[in-house]
Length: 222
Image 1 (spheres, rainbow, N blue to C red):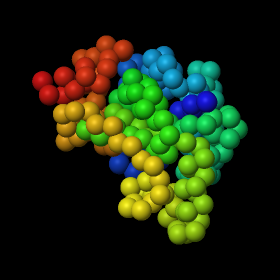
Image 2 (spheres, rainbow, N blue to C red):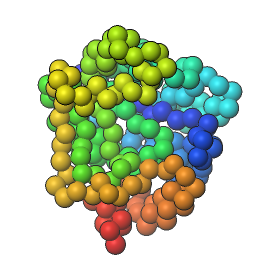
Image 3 (tube, rainbow, N blue to C red):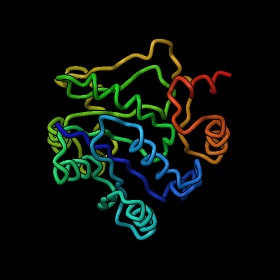
């Protein structure tokens, strides 16, 4: 079994343009995510970047390759197809979907999800602050999702709505939600706006590079 983490990022954010390149922990934010997962995850075999073919995103691709990671580029949209293409090329059985506006994505949480995937099609963790966890699914499951997209949505909708298949009643997907214990989902560490970014910088400055989700929560509630 081969596990691949795909970190999607782009420069065209409407609320915080160029946030992928904002400094975070001494490096561009999207690279901070990749580096920390590469360094601390024990179960992710490969981690790659993914952005679009628009010229403004050349910088993301260039920096990713300059730091010895692969970066795949596809036209805007079609997220499901993009991830399937990458997983197929890399020979991955399992995909970890990570977005570039979640710099606090925790590699230790990702490993826990992979450890508990078992025979499930899809797994995530509930009760965590928004922006800490990720989605994990089988490559073959994503193919089933894509088939349903083309059957039920037009090509513009399928990119944004496709993952709702996992939460739809009677979807026939075997879904697992691990629970944290206490519920901290009222906290958010996703970076969508300048306010979010300033808040995130204040938080990360209080943490060591090898911090756990428990360390992060301690800072959030203090």
